[in-house]
Length: 371
Image (tube, rainbow, N blue to C red; front, side, top):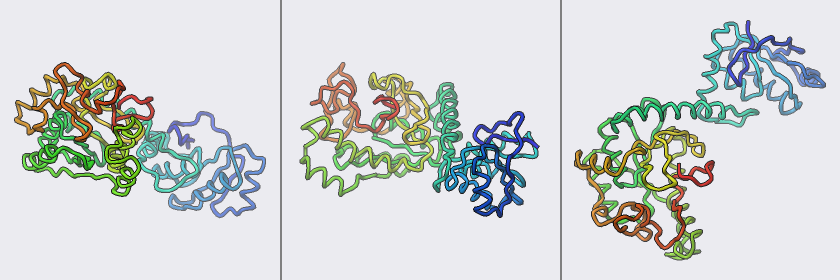
């Protein structure tokens, strides 16, 4: 018999004896007596692994009786119970085979969603593991040179739904080609802000015909748009940076957040050459704000790499690129750039801020840096 720390998944050295033993049918009086003035471990017995009464007793000890000490699970326990024990307030569990400790730990780290409120939230444990997995994926992708193989590697390493938010620009068209070539199951969509260039929608159709992949058009909330225009006017976004960022928030950021909800992976076309703010963008990282793995498979590509890949594979591109449009957003907010200008100089050109981001790729935990 060994004692397992549920939070860390490690064995407890020299565990103390439980001060109180509770049967699963313990009543309120027994709980009050166990919790009152008792800082020692309270052990709750599980006669069979699917007896939920022990879970309820732990919750009552924590929430009703305010017990702060160790609560220990004993009896017939299996690793699949780990996350439920931890969430309901248990600290430790007696396990018969010490060699099973890694299995118990894995059962906690596999949590991806909480469906009900709990005394303790183990999702940070899962996120710590996911962050490490994202860092490992970043290292793997660095060693993989083929864009198609990078998409395949992400699909192999990320469980669940992976989304690709495409703006139909050069980077995203290259990625779309690789997605189609890889055969990976990826949910592809674009944000239809209501103010896209007609050429963008034409590129959507050409791409669907070429690659036989449906590109979903995701629209903003109609009522929010009506309220925005009623308050700021049709071109109110030009009156102030704050107005423009509000417009981007409603037309782009919120629809994107809705699509990312529940996804485990997100593919983006960010490149380090885009701007100073994107200079350190990794190939893969854990996105804390959206609780998923974000992959930027062309982050380390140069413009020469990108244009060569497009030419070699005869990839359909937005005709606006041939007219000097490098970074293409909404029609009223985008102009062509002059030779030698920053690629994002054509976005919101009436503004004088150095850092021009719409908010889609800003990580709230990085003080405004692109992610």
